[in-house]
Image 1 (cartoon, rainbow, N blue to C red):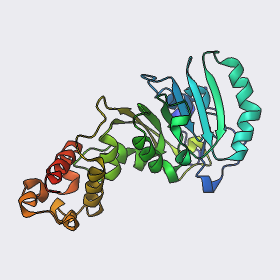
Image 2 (cartoon, rainbow, N blue to C red; image 1 turned 180 degrees about the vertical axis):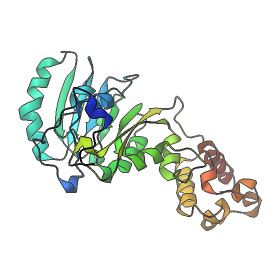
Image 3 (cartoon, helix red, strand yellow; image 1 turned 30 degrees about the vertical axis):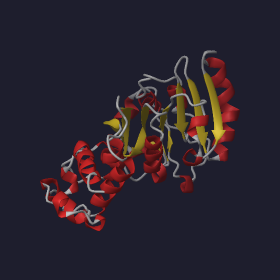
Image 4 (cartoon, helix red, strand yellow; image 1 turned 90 degrees about the vertical axis):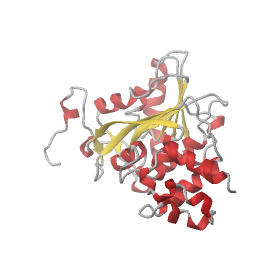
Length: 284
């Protein structure tokens, strides 16, 4: 790092400053302090099919102002009391005075993973975005998947390795459980990489920004719980063939003799896993 400058720092709007809120290690906080990156992340939202947005971990609000669009409603969720107090004191009133009366902005002290998101906007569709704490980012994605009937779009920043894994296709060593379970319901796109030096404190790794757009048909044409079980069993022994990975299921020979059982899990596309689940369903 040292004196090396990222490409983002060349933008006149990219200003570095000490964070007014102390980052808490136990919350996985790394505050973004580059305006051009924040604006770029805010612009990842397409705003198609929804009027409500949930931001997870607003911190000091650097990203927040680029998320709220004209005519949209934003709820920012954070667990950090200091961040909540800062936003309410130095950000919320000023921000609310500048936005359209057609929009609304609320800050809530809440744990997203424990929040019933259906009550945030009375059951209306919502997009999820944010600079996600690395330690819970995968859990955030899985919760979005569970609530996919409410979540047509999901964007945000992860540890680069995790963002890549979510968007990876079959044939790659990075392709795994979260890749398959996410892409079964969403079209996943890796957008851009963000270097450590635009954060305070800087993380030890690069970050990656992605976008998930819910598929038009996001229902599962097979038993969803069985599908999830099969995907997890296969990738938990990813070096083995599908036959060996699913050995504990005690499947009959007439099923396991199918050529798909000779393959390894990273060779199967999402649709192939769906077809595998449908095949196994016939024997149960």
